[in-house]
Each structure stands twice: as C-alpha cells, then as structure tokens.
Length: 119
Length: 107
Image 1 (tube, rainbow over the protein chains, first blue to last red):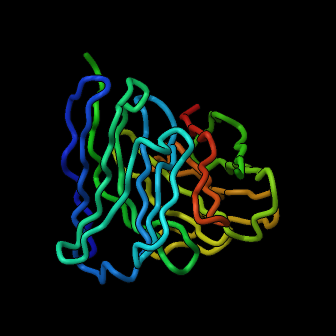
Image 2: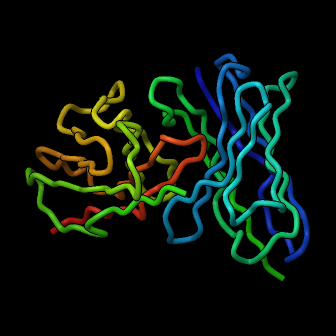
Image 3: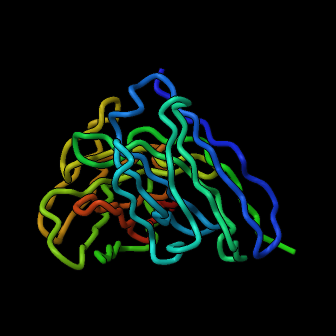
C-alpha cells in the first residue's frame, strides 16, 4: 500500500543540524512532487518546502529559506530535509506529504517526526 | 505570498448540527483549495480537493464549495467522530499555504 515513513527526529541544540528522511513505498516515487509540512506544539500546520517530481524545482517557506534543504534520492525512494542552524522556533512535528496530481493536495502523509530544538 | 484566513477559529456544536467553516484567500486561487481534518497526534486527512471534490472514502456529509477567493466546508450532520480541527490549504501556487485552523468542539 501507499506509505510514507519519516525518521531522523530527535532533540538537538540550537545552531546544530539534523536530517529528516521520508521513505516512500507503494507508488512510483519519481511521479510525484513531495512536500514537508510542520506543526509546532499546539499550533497549526505550516508548509515548509516542496520538491518537484524530477527534483529540478525546489521552493521554501521564508522562515526556513537558506537554512533548510529539501532533496530526494530516487534509488532509495526517499525524501530528505536537511535542517541547519536550527532555532527553538523550529521545534515541531515534521510531516512529509505526497502531492496528488488531481488537485495538488495531499491524500498521503507520513506519521510525523518530532524535532525538538533545545539546549 | 497567498494568505489564507479561516473563520471561525473554533465552533461549539452538537451531534447532528450543521457546521460551516469559511476560508478566504488573499488573491484568487481558482478552485485550487483543499480541506483537511486533523485529530490530536495524527497526520491531516484529506477531505475535499479542488474546492468541491470529495476524496475517496470520505463520508458524503462533508461538502465543499467556492472559487476565486471565498470557500466553504460544510458538515451537514455532525457525527461524534467529526470533532477535530479543520484546515484549508491553497494549492494554486507551487508552494502551499494553510489556514490557521478551526476547532470543532462538543457543545
């Protein structure tokens, strides 16, 4: 079945780096744009980044631009989010999501990975 | 950037009530609007895409309408499992924007 599984979350000190992974299965990974969305504790959903199906286009929220990098590995069917210069306000659950071609929304989400930035 | 404004931020309702949530875009987004339901500790669940198309497996009591800048999610007869937070999301541009959410609570 179609599935996304995140990993790589944890506790990290401010200013340090962390890389999240999102393993995709059950669909043709190279056919879909992929997104990262985050949710700070008790807050709403915040879009973070998107990468096109072929990896040629990447866009970021202003809040993470220059610090986060989205990428994908087709040989491993895996999406990544490299997070550098982390701040306390980056503390959140990070979800990966597959963008469906029939409406550009997401019916498929991962379970989420918690990132806590704290000294 | 396109901003999405949802209202109300919360609503208290009873089972079998009709509930309406609105979402306004800061600029026209045609029909590229989706609605999600989220329960605590879970990933969002897609309910409606392209403003009015019901996602497969979603009960027909959920419906969406609107185009341009003004959109509505309606739950025709609220059920116990519908108490949750609902978000709109614009999909007009390559980047997404979510509304701030509407919490549907038990009256």
